[in-house]
Image 1 (tube, rainbow, N blue to C red):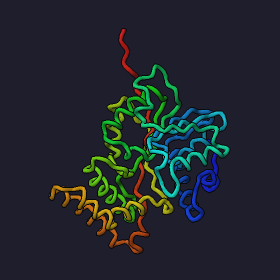
Image 2 (cartoon, helix red, strand yellow):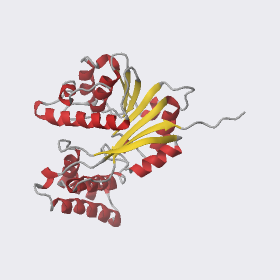
Image 3 (cartoon, rainbow, N blue to C red):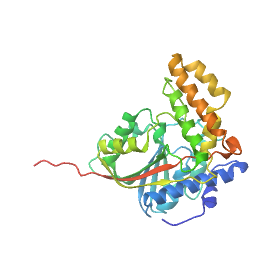
Image 4 (cartoon, rainbow, N blue to C red):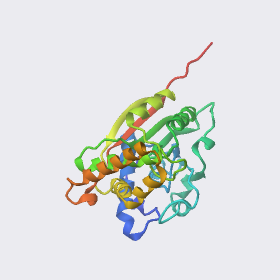
Amino acid sequence: MSTIAPEELAKFMLTPENGFQSQAAQISHRQEIISTWGGIRIGENVLELGCGQGDCTIVLAHAVGENGTVDAVDPAPPGYGSPYTVHEAQQHISSTALGPRISWVASDPLNFLPEDSTEPKYDVGVLAHSLWYFSSPLTIRTTLQRLRSLCKRVYIAEWALSASSAPAYPHVLAALTQASLECRKLETVSNVRTVVSSAAIRKLAEDAGLKIVSEGVVVPKAGLKDGFWEVCAVTSQRFLQQIEDKVKDEREKAVVIALRDATLRSLEGLEGGRKAVLSMDVWCGSLSVQERSTHP
């Protein structure tokens, strides 16, 4: 995989002028994840599930080169997202030099994936920071089962629920707080819908017929703002109002409020408060397809 500065790849994204450095940090983070997986080879055909606005997609598209392809799938409606919508962001990337390598697919992953494939269509299937958007662990397992027959190998990256430094602990608590509220909603558009730990992902992958080949942890750099954004979300008055509106059982409400209070308490020891929050660790796993049993 050829190297390129994250600032150069960030130019392919539709980004507000004051958000360029934050976007470059997101690109750099995806580059580190892909390196931890073991890389993407020139000429490979890649399937990305949960592509969003294309942060990882452009890194993959650059990695596969002119002869490679990336099918980028996401269920979000065209108008989802801010300050730019998913449609606007994706169409902007399509207008760049990387555009011809990418096919955008607006679909739920399970509607896109065949139930069984006689032979692999893709060299690699990628799920980068997308598992927490899935509706349930069962949906994750079913998705991995279908990827098993469609891809030669599968790469997964997700928040690890661990913190290598104290300023990242508030992010862990904020994510669990958000999840504790969202699992009590019938419908959600949150970016934290189904929290699964790295241990749970390993088990789901094993149940789906995938084998961990290698794994590692990426410790995000200070420029990655996901932890800050999540902490701001759950400590806001708006979030407190959502608890009152959505959680009717008093004991369940007490749990969500306690987690929010724990998040607030974790900020007290940080010089700089919320602005000092870092993003938690990221678990990265490279998986291969287990041999299917054959019968004479």
